[in-house]
Length: 296
Image (cartoon, rainbow, N blue to C red; front, side, top):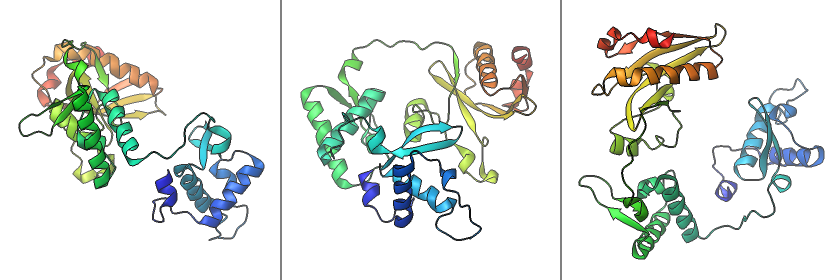
C-alpha cells in the first residue's frame, strides 16, 4: 500500500484534488459509497462526477487511506482506515528482509511446499529475490525445510515435517473449483504437479477460447479430470452445462459421475436454479453414458 501511495503511475491514477475532497467528505459525513458522489449537476466533464470520485475511492483504498466498512450487494461502503483498523495492528513498514521472511513463511504455511517463483509471484526486484534466497538458506541450515531437486523442474522447498507423513489417499468426491481457487491460481505449479493446464478464458477473445468463457476445474479425489463451462439462466431457473470437457479418460466414468452430478446439483441450487441441462460433452464417446439419469 505504501508502494501504491508513493507511485505516480499506478493503475488507479486519481486526481489529488478529488482524493482530498473524497477524504474530507467521508471524514465530515461518515462512510460513503461511490454512488454518493454522483454529480447532481448536468455539467459534463466536471471532476465532481462519479467516475473521478470512483477512481479516487479505489486509489485511496489501494494505498490504505480507506477501508471497506460494509457492502450492499456489489456496492462497497468506504470509511477512513483510522476508524476501522484495530489499534493493535502493527503498521510498521517491514525491512526488505522482514518482507522476504514473511512471504517465505506464509507460502510454506499455506501450501507445505513452494518455489522461488511462487514466493515472488507478482513481485519484482532483484533485492527481494536475494532476500528470499537468504531466508530459504537460513531455514535449510536450521533444518526446518528441505530442498528437493527434480530433473528439468525448478527446485522445491518443503517443510521437513511433511516428509515424515504417510501418503493419505484423497477421498473420491468431486469438487468444482472456482477459477480463482488458491490451489490452481499458479498455472505452472498445477501443470508441474498435476499435469493439468488451466487458464481462465473469460479474458481470452472468444475466437481463441479452447474450453469456454468461465470453466470450472473438476477435481476427483486428488486428480483433475477435466473442466466444465457453466451458465446459470436465473430467469428460467435453469443451470446449463454448456460444455463438459473430460480430459482424464483413464478413470472409469462410473466412479466419478454420481459424485459429479451431486456437485453440479449443489452448485445449481447455490445459483438459484431448479433444473439442469447438459448441452455438450467431450470426448463424444461419453455421450453413451446416461448422464441424465444422474442429473435428474
